[in-house]
Length: 199
Picture (spheres, rainbow, N blue to C red):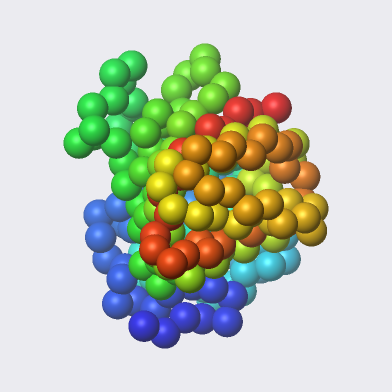
């Protein structure tokens, strides 16, 4: 699988119904702000052509790309993904929890408790394959509160240039203002719960 220089995947993973709905929503958000593709490219650091292809669902955006767009639009990744799903119910059965994959990065994200009107917190399950390494250059919302609880495996989380090594059962609590990095330090995969609370 090939990747563009700014992190977008090539079309071999695009074209799913979720990609189509997500692309349409990204185009709507840009229109709501009155921005051209060029203006959004300047704000996000993502090339104009990649943004255009993502809006047309010709490519499937990576976790890093969605994080940059969420930062520009002032919403969490779960909020953005929930906007392309049906209105979440109060009780979310396992089979109804939205799952999103960044296959090239070895990352699977399950929205266990999607964003809901009137609630500030959400719960996410993350899974990283051995050696997977995801870096976010900024938080989707500055000051976002996060609690990372490792359920299985080992995880390295870098916050403000400080590395934290977490084993099964360990929990890291933080407010995110700058870059973060999640790395599966192996030898196997890691599974963790992420509680996200809006400031």
